[in-house]
Image 1 (cartoon, rainbow, N blue to C red):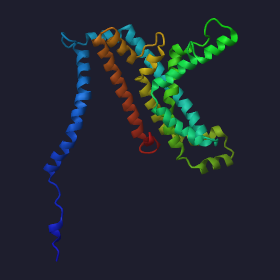
Image 2: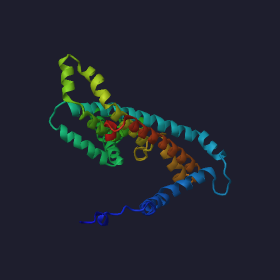
Image 3: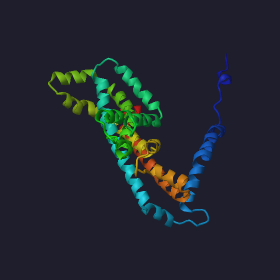
Length: 295
């Protein structure tokens, strides 16, 4: 008779398993410590206790009450909120067209969304400059056609130009989860609703919107997080008097060499970003593993 006990694989001891787990956990923790937590701790230390001074909240209070910071926070909130709202509206409408209105090339349009997500933000801003800039195609055509002395289209170098550019860049981040949510809706539901006399807007309001709400909220919160931290679009457009918090950090550290003020603003930006990220994760967790989990 075969001794089965002799062929049984012994389970690892708890102590040995714990030590083996540490061998896998320690290296990534060290990488995070060196590349993230240590630089972040230096920024926080500089914000709380500038070099050569003791820990004090006086400088933080001075920076937070400054006109530059208040203006930067205002522009950050307005641009991020407006761009996110535009992304939600435009993304929802375009997703409806691609998902529910048959037209040639609809699958290709879905693939283009993934391609736009992969493109760098400055590339879209560069395209906007070529089209809507002072010497762009649109102004060139209007000046030649109407013999104007000044370019008539100048919205690009303003807060609205930044908002429009961010809507164009970040709308695919709303469309991608929305298209995934729309794919889970049974066509039979829409057909039954239409056969009972429901108009398209009622179908959207009572069937499509409730089914896509988790993906819509998750995509919107992700867009809000991205727009709050957007730096390249604002810098590349160079809008006059439009200074967001990331731009203010750059100006204080690189142009004015005021590293303490830059660190204070950076800490505020990090806290704001972590709060928005917590909101993003809370929305996904609240709606569970359904459509929101596709984001």
